Length: 357
View: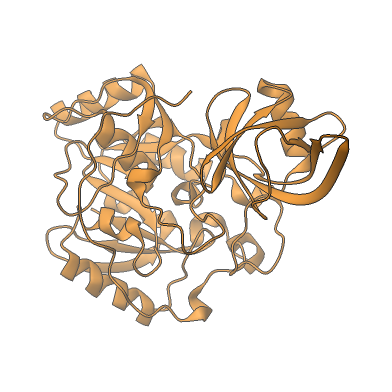
């Protein structure tokens, strides 16, 4: 089960506001727009200067050097929306009702936190998901989450989830795109309920090119949790949003070598930043191992390990913007975002990319 993280979150205000025209919401994967995933647009933002460069993502090698380290999140997206029947037995009465279940966070091989769409479930209810898969509701005391204990575990549980579930889609997505569009090409370990989308534009061809020029590629694993809880009135900040991570020994060693040799550690995604900064000491050394993080990074956080970031474009007032302000002052970030809007960059998981370096 989830331990206490023991990590004190940074404090800060909400991310800044700006107007995002609806037509800049990317509703279609690049591949369905007629381009490869690594041909999406890329805005490069200088941390020290605020200068922007506009190019395409496959030109990423132009901005990295031999000796730099690219750290990717290897977590694989699961189809986290499940249809279920709530089975409740009270006295001599049995009541069955259909509902939607959104997986929110994996706790162990059999146990997940989830959100029940209609909020009707109570402890003791049983969810009938497939002929082979049920789940018992064990706790409902951390609204809006319920604790589910599945009847299967491990690979058998995932087999049923992948057979029955659908990927989480938000209101700007009007077409039920298949799960494959919500995966990075290098994802390996299932567990994320939302795609670690910063890595979506990366192709094997691009990784081979980076390695051939002397850029090291390493992996961490952080299973992303549910970011929207079906109720806008529920406060939900990163410090309330603990996520499980794993840092392999070889990744910790690669970070140490990169730092010793003067290279840059570039995180692919805010999930990687959160993972590495949680496990880093004051000198920037990262400890291998696994744990939970609720680290809330704002402009008050002094980055200890990560030197650069590849990320998508984030919504107005999103907490992710606060993390970005740890890399570049908010006035420069705000200016760059206004420029991205003027230039017609696309937002969200199927959109364009931003390199902060």
